[in-house]
Length: 256
Image 1 (cartoon, rainbow, N blue to C red):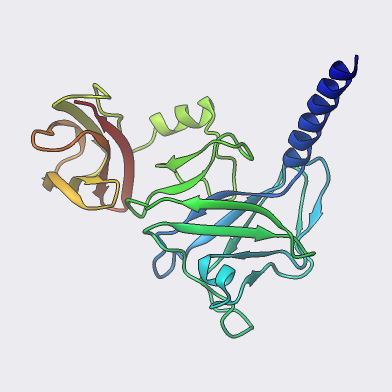
Image 2 (cartoon, rainbow, N blue to C red):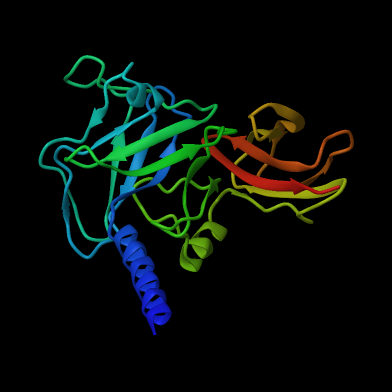
C-alpha cells in the first residue's frame, strides 16, 4: 500500500508539473534575421485561461544573462489576453541606454523572466538559414520546437487547411519539391502571375548558397526546374524564390 501511495503521489506531482508548465507564459516564435525595417523580435504566448499583466517581465539574450547587456523590459501596463500573443521587438531603440539587443542569426540562447525575476522559459535558437525563417513551438506553447519557413508573427504557428487553400489560390506560389526526401534529383515547381526576374536558390542550414537554379526574366506562368544534389552531403536544405515583391522559402531533405 505504501508503494502504491508513493506511485500515486509521483503521478500527481507529474500532472501538477505539466499543469504548471501549461499555465506559464512562453516564448512561442523567434525571429533573428532582422534587417532595417524588419527587426528581430520575440513572440510570447499565453496558454492559460486568464489574462496576464506583462509589467516587469523581461526577455534577454546571452549578453543580458551574463550582465554585459541590459535586459529588454516589456512596456508597463501591457496585457496579454488568455490564449493570446504579444510580440516584442528586441533591437529597437529603447528609452533606457542599452535596452536593446540583436538576436544572433548564428544561434544563441534567450530567456524570459517574470516580474519577480524568476526565469519561466528559455530557448536555444539554432542558426537561421534565411531571412524568411523563424524558430518556435508547434503547436503553440508546446514542447516541440522547429524552424518555420512560414513566419506567423503575432498569430498561431498552426496553419489551418483554410489558410492552405487561400495560399493555393495566391497569384504567386512556390510548391513543395517532389520527391522529398530525395536523392540525388528532385523537382521544384512555382507559379508567377506577372512577368519579372525570377531567382530560385538553394542554401544550406547555415544560409550558404549551394545552387542557383533560376536567375532570369520569366513571363507569367507555371514552371518547374530540377535540382541535382550530386556532390552535396545528406541533410536539410532550403530553397528560396524571389520575383517582383514576392518571396517564399521551403525546406527540402537530401537523404543518401
